[in-house]
Picture 1 (spheres, rainbow, N blue to C red):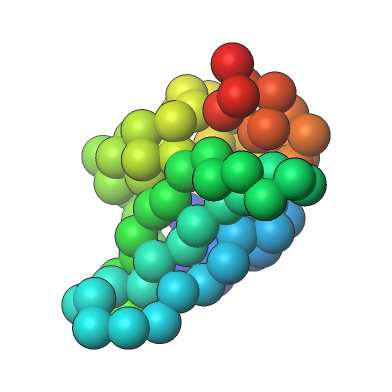
Picture 2 (cartoon, helix red, strand yellow):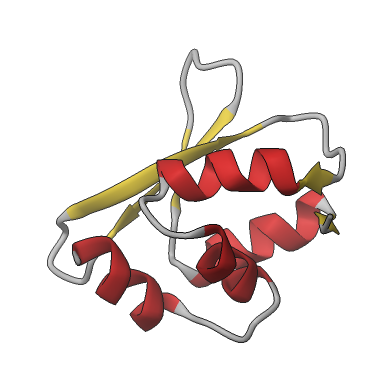
Amino acid sequence: MAVFSALKVKEGLNKLNARKQSGRHPHIVYEVFDDDGTFLGQTHMSHSGKDIDDNLLNLMARQLKITMSLFKGIIKCTKGRADYINVAKG
């Protein structure tokens, strides 16, 4: 079971150029758009900063409309925005 720090996951979301949404939601919402502005997916993260395990990573990947292995690749810096867009647009 893989565990990533919240900071590492945020860095991965930043590589996707995810936009952080503010508002009344109890969590941080990240939205991802392609280069044309088309919405591709969104995910939520807690404000707590706790480590994120496989269960939560899987939920986040599903919210982003990708596989968990691709999401882990993005977090580990072996995959990038172009890989995400290709899969999310599928």
